Length: 339
Image (tube, rainbow, N blue to C red; front, side, top):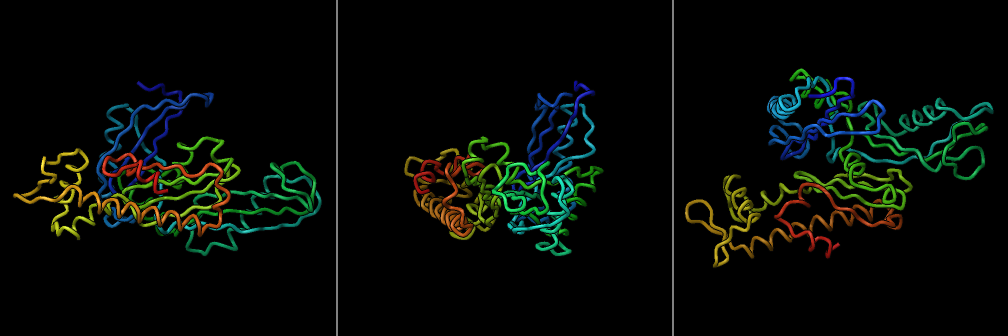
């Protein structure tokens, strides 16, 4: 039974293949976080990070939340939801504001951010995450914390992560359909970074690569700040689509069956994976196609980091995470070797 005096929060990750949800209990002093229940179920109604059937996706979310409710006896009327996809944009802009000489306060920071948003965002776009770094007051060098410092000019690099308002509205509507409010929307790549990276990684410079079912999120950190983020349209689902196309598996379930048998090493002594009515595929040939797709992912990741211009900032290199990395379909050692 949950202690009702404590703070209980629920977070939901809506992926292309699965919906993952976790409910946790935070102590009153904010020092102890206890995971109460984790659940994951198949995700329907979403494809390539875009909602294609809101009603089906609503049912999928509700299915996961109902399990959490039953196991914890906790009412869940609001959740935090993760968001990603190719339509997440990342941009850094240098902004400067002037004011009568006084101590820098929170209002100055808010004005700085607002000015950055006005220069970058259109009326149809919405902020998901903001970072401020390289802060200077008047003609000073970079200051770590500007609050309370006397000055008349504030300058900084403002990094904005944003997406279309319609995508956010559609996601909120999908959740609201099952009688649940959206308390907060966060960037999935940011959540992955917070749960995966050590403070030293984020400070020294690192690229987190989160390879999911429908896409791969790339987020770069330096000095504990996000300096770049992008999503590329490659993920675990492409192994299935490759089989459907290359081996003419007319129905998706045949491709899933093949991959599951390969994952569990259900391979005959003569080196074949048998499926359907007497059909078979060479395990070696299948592995070659999987490795080719993995190499394409790595090339995309490499070119994306090169494009960011921050290659020399990654003192801690790369960190790989995500469902595909933990999947037995791919050889993680080969990925690391290739990188």
